[in-house]
Amino acid sequence: MINQSHMLNTIEDEELFDYETFCQTFLNLTNLLDSENSTFSSKDLNYNFSRSVDRNEIIKEEEYIKRARIINTKLFPNQRIKIKAVAGSGKTSILKNFARANPNNKYIFICYNKSVQAEKEEEFLKEGITNVSVRTLHSLAWEGTKHFHKKKVVGKFKILERNLSYSFLIEKTLENFFVGNQTEIDSSHIPEEEIKIYFLKERRKYDQSQIKSVKESVLYYSKLIWNNLCDSDSDNIISSKIKINHDAYLKYFQLHTELHASVYRDLPLLIDEGHDFNPCSLDILFRNFKTGIIVYDPHQSIYQFRGALETKEIDSLDTTYEETLAQTFRFGMPLSNLVTKFIKKAKKLPNFEVFSDEKIKTGYTKVSNSFSLIENQTYFLLLSRTNLSLIKELFDIYIKNEEIYYTIYGGDEEFRKTLDELDHLHSFIIGEVNYFEGFSNLTKMINFYLDSKNLAMINKINYVSYNLSSFGLILKKIHNGLCKEKKYSDFTISTTHRVKGSEEDIVYLSDDFIETNSHGIVTSSDFQIISDEEINILNVALTRARKHVYINEKTAERMNSILQENLL
Image (tube, rainbow, N blue to C red; front, side):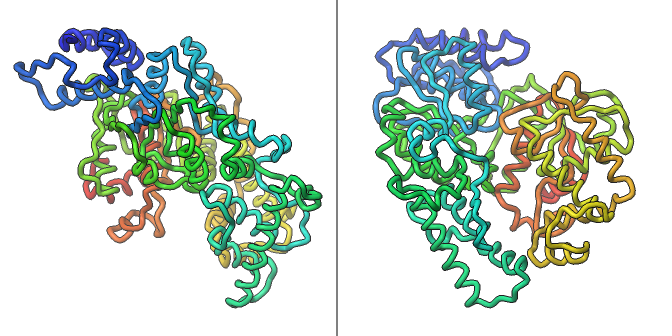
């Protein structure tokens, strides 16, 4: 028997809880167990509840036991473990320590993207964990589909031949097909709303018969292009005019299951952040996930715009054993209480709860802007939903400040694209250069984007127009203030989607969280139309903070409306 008082004293000697130390402690303790045991259950512990303990202490002990049980599990062929875990609960660390506890077994660690892969490879190597191959699904599919992609891949699927005026509809149809789990292209992949944009661009009136005709043509050419790409015996006249993206060869890999065995080699999978994967990716994973562990958090699923769905498919996955981890090691109270109340209320989940170590304190404050953080020279992470909102925040900062420098987390390509688009809009509005083919004046541009319901573009036009007199000067300051390295910057900026998986001591949330179909404060009627994805985006943003999160008053008021109480 393991003495529980020794276990707890070992952990609680530290002033602040350190998750890595905790995992190593448990590895040492679980080695004392009989090697024949396949799992580590609570009955293996020498419990003594004769002493008086409060609820939080019991919960903490239970959470420790859960983690030890997972790490000590001996996986046999065709056994799968499913772990639902809150933000900051150490999802990746559990997989890492599981692998460390089983050095004689080989595993494939599956992560979402290339930047995470590079980070985890370095981390595993530094800690001497050599029995794990860290991969993305795309990197695995790349090996098995070289005859398909021929190492010629671009960021966005592109039809180079523009004889068809609705090529963009075919591109979008194929992109929708790539991220889904269907085996055939059908009408559900055609972007209905974009067909109306096509008619607007062509300056053509339309009725249902014309829409039907375009849909039939789009479906025909989409199938023709895909079949030609997949046919290795074709003359490639069509495929030579196509630039495929990474999702195209992943789709090919999904449909050609005979390619899977040579790549996965029946090795157990350790799947990190399962909630990020789209249906195509999950189909590949579940076909090959015969043995292993998947960790996920339904409240961090924020990539629906890339095809990721809610986590119901993972929830319904048959497993040998499943666990829920509700304790976070990243942040403490009162933030953990706020996150608990917000998810409970917004998603109507009365049993949801996030627990934190009472020694860790993480506060939250409603503020009107980020100026006080800059004035006090407090380093912080500025988070927004969109790149436009990041630029708006920077615009306000540079109106008041000259020598301020910032860096961007996770790459600046999309941010720079938005900056350039605003710069081009400014040039167009003041009559310098027309970068927008097809628009002779601002009125025609506005009418087009209103008719096509492109509210994102309307917001950009409105913002540039409102700040027209100072826009060029401030935009130059924003360009000049961007620096490559964090150590030279005063703060970091990021969209919530890019910063996922990261953390910072101090976080500031901008005013654009909880988007609804109405303007301003969320009303009781709006409450019903807030998507789970919007709730998840705010949850991810809130839970990046280790010490304090500052919430813009507009976002705070929307949260108060959902909570139906003034917590902020």
